[in-house]
Structures are given as C-alpha cells and as structure tokens.
Length: 152
Image (cartoon, rainbow, N blue to C red; front, side, top):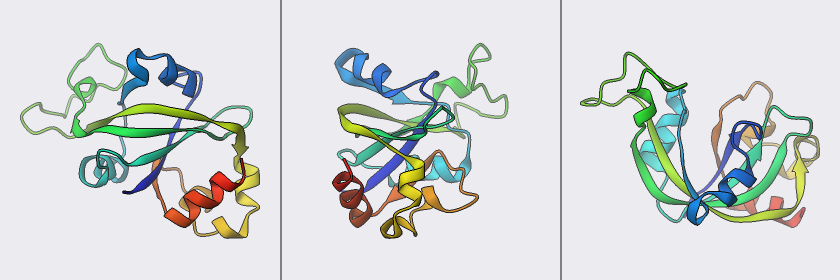
C-alpha cells in the first residue's frame, strides 16, 4: 500500500464536502499538472491511504484521511467546454488528464498546520515542507505517515 497527500482548497472542495458526498465518495478531478497526473494514473492503487490537505486558506494543513477506491481513469471535465477544467487539447480517444475516486475515512483529531509540519526534523525530506514544491499530489513515506498521525 502507498501513502499520499492531496491538496484542495476548502472553499472549492474540502474534507466536509467529501464526507457529505453520497457514500463519502467522490472523484478527484481537475488536476492539470503532468507530474501529479502521472502519480494518479500510474501509481495510485485501490486501497492506498491519502492525507486530505487544505491549501490556500487561513491555516493550511492536514485535516483528514481518505482512501483511493477507484484507480486512475480519464477526467471527463477535460473534454467539456462548460467545465472549469476544460482542456481543448485533450482528446477522449487519447486522454491527457486523469482522476481517481476517493472515499472519506475520517477527520484528524485536529488540523495539523503546515507551519508545525515544517518545524519537524522527521519530515525534512517530505515534499510538502520543501521550499518551492507546489504539487497538489505527492507521495508520503510510511515513516512520514506514521509520524504525522502521532501529532494528532
């Protein structure tokens, strides 16, 4: 099993939105970065655990846990001109963008803020805390995962 961190702005799609979705399950669409796309398309597997991270808000941080319940498949928002994430260069016969389905597992006992994560030497190699890393999806090692859960 792999571990991941996925970022979303809470005013666009937050942990509460996922929890309230039918069956606590929704698709993770709109990713338009090739490196993040490759992780969803090629590496995320059913059963992988994911930290839900609230970004671009008053206190960015890890707020919950979700699970991958459907592996990468073409993101239909790329093909629809009415959608926010429409990409006119994406072709349904040769999709450029992918998504996964995720299921709410639980909220953390508290928001673990980015500032606190950055202050932990145990997480110094985590992409999230390294300067200049802006990816919305990133791998988390088992040791990092366990350490972050110990901060709850």
